[in-house]
Amino acid sequence: MKKILDFIADEVKKAFEEAGYDGSFAGVTLSNRPDLCEYQCNGALAAAKTYKKAPLAIAEDVVARLQDSRILAAAEAVRPGFINLKLNAVFLGEYLRKMQADQRLSVEPAANPRKIIIDYGGPNVAKPLHVGHLRSAIIGESIKRMGRFMGHEVIGDVHLGDWGLQMGLIITELKRRKPDLPYFDESYTGEYPKEAPFTISELEEIYPAASAYSKDHEDYRQEAMEATYLLQHGHRGYQAILQHILNVSVTDLKKNYEKLNVTFDLWKGESDAQPYIPEMVSYLKEKGYAYEDQGALVVDVKEETDAKEVPPCMILKSDGASLYTTTDLATIVERMRDYHPDEILYVVDKRQEMHFIQVFRCARKTGLVEEDTKLTFLGFGTMNGKDGKPFKTREGGVMRLEYLLQDIEEEMYHKIMDNHAIDPEEARKTAKLVGLSAIKYGDLSNQASKDYVFDLDRFTSFEGNTGPYILYTIVRIKSILNKYREMGQNPDEAVIGAPAGESEKTLMLTLSRFNAACENAFEELAPHKICAFVYELANNFNSFYHETRILSEENEAQRASWIGTLKLTRDVLEKSIDLLGFSAPERM
Image 1 (cartoon, rainbow, N blue to C red):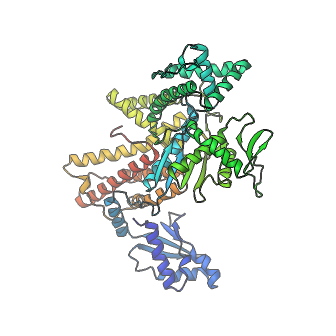
Image 2 (cartoon, rainbow, N blue to C red):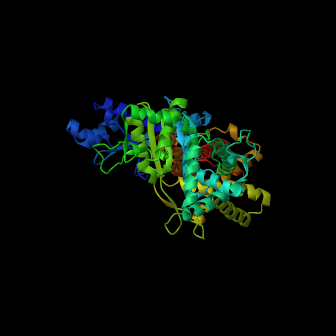
Image 3 (tube, rainbow, N blue to C red):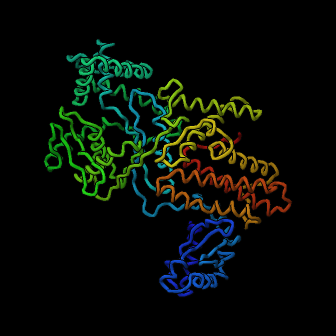
């Protein structure tokens, strides 16, 4: 559906042209003074220089051509040359009826859909998810959902960390504990066991133990580095251990991501990029892009316009080992060959910005990506505690993600039980939904690039700009619709009419902006803009609700019109929170 702002802009443009002025001056925006008008046009101020005429006179000329508009109820020229506009209530009702009949709730799919790969996981295998993984998962999932809703083909890749020294440390520690396993027998030629020689709990204990031991024992660290080298160069037994690590870890990771309502299409890791590295390195050497510097292989990526130094992109270390830059470049090669994406988007900690500047420039300079393939870095800020420092447990460690989710669910469960007489089992299910809304909305309502304070008390509140407040609003609407059914009426047959009052019109105007909000949020990769829209819509609904006796209204047509507006409000709110990655219960 055409955006309502475009309808108004077209009307104003026609008026400018009929008055003898260029239509390019007819830009219309939402009013920054909603107490005076709903929309405004400031074009007469700019046109005054071109036509050497007083801006107020130009505005009056335009307004004179808008008096018979079917779309506008009022158009007024005010000093020094603003044009204040109010929408026609009948037209607004018509627009919302079309929106209600549209399965996509007025959102047009992209005219030129793109194929986009989003890299938004990045956990290391053999380690539990912790709060540091939260933002990438939550922001990336929301952008993936927005992109798909806008009609693009979006592929989510977890991009596991499964190739560095940590793998060598796990192999070395496993060999120390279980030296008789066939993976360490160089003469073994048979099939390796299908069952992993460890559980996820044992694996999560092995790595930190090995890491700590290696810091005080250089011989052990050297052994781990040798194991890493052998793994990266095809050691059969170590490759089999890696596969066990992946199988056990990914099974556990999937369970934990599922609790966050986060899914990936690809469960690839750095190890998947390894087959592409030798050919890529040969290509970079042969084409003269890569050269040796103190034994390491590097590619220069600095540019004359750089305000700060951008170091060369290191491809291989002096001992021939690969780095994150190597695997990230090889992953780009893999993605280009397998998917030919129009864009690859990385949702990662903003502190990695320099790394991705190097990787992107290297990929472009050397032709590893096609010229029209966009490489995008979306860096997010830190989730901090109330002390302003990165969020930690009370003991000062990094909190496991599952424990954080448990704490929030428990908090919501007690609040629900305290406020309502409800079955404890139902309260538990509701607490999971509301708890997830608290953590996701609490994160996404902040601009991605900014740090924010994780405040459990504020995020779990049923008042203010929070997930639980949004869900409570949706549940309130569902309750009214259910009562309407109990009166023998069908909400699906309710037809939206023109607004009868100001609070209703404000609500309807907000609903009409849903398509613009979705389009703008995805274009700017800004889930916080969906949150801002949702909060405004919830507030405007609650204002209307408190002013209006909806179900006791005696005029059946008026009551049905209000029910139609409520149903559309529920649908828009539910679609919006689905884009944010959570859902609402039936009752709270």
